[in-house]
Image 1 (cartoon, helix red, strand yellow):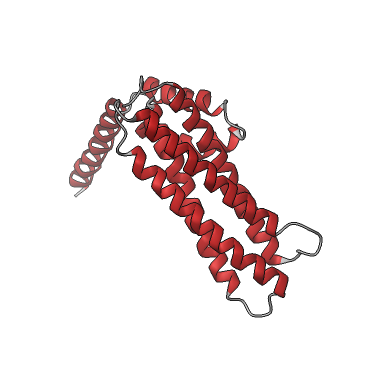
Image 2 (cartoon, helix red, strand yellow):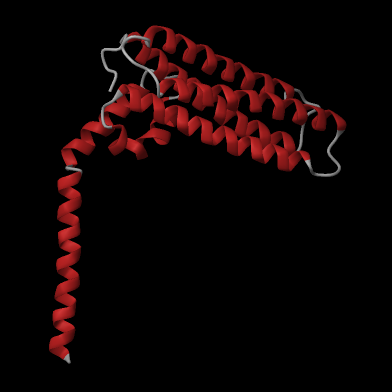
Length: 203
């Protein structure tokens, strides 16, 4: 019985070690370090480099050192955060007892963040169809859409400005919108950097 348990234990150990070796071969440490450094370097040109690094470094192995994948991931993270914020605002807007001023600002915010989500989705869609022959026009469109998304987010924040807009709703929404706006700003900076390569780094 003890011999059987010993063999079983050795088999499990062998499987664990084999898995670790396979993982190391698939993602060598020096490659991961290089990918992390690439993200850190790219984020240094953004307005909010710490947020940029935190939001993208977890995807280092899939981004590798590709400017296109970096932009795609930054847009994806921003889009997901925007959608989550939009859902939160819809839930808060259904609370009874919101002050009229807050309810009106919330309704306006839901509308403009919806526009921002659409613009980010359009940008991601266009990025997927980019090629050497259309990069200038496509990148111009993407820059326009992401800039418009940032303007929409700023409009939402403006609606919650002022001393008369206090309380839970303002705090929750404003903090979320600020994060979305900062992510969008970072994505736009990375897009501008990618556009400046004029297609030399399409992969």
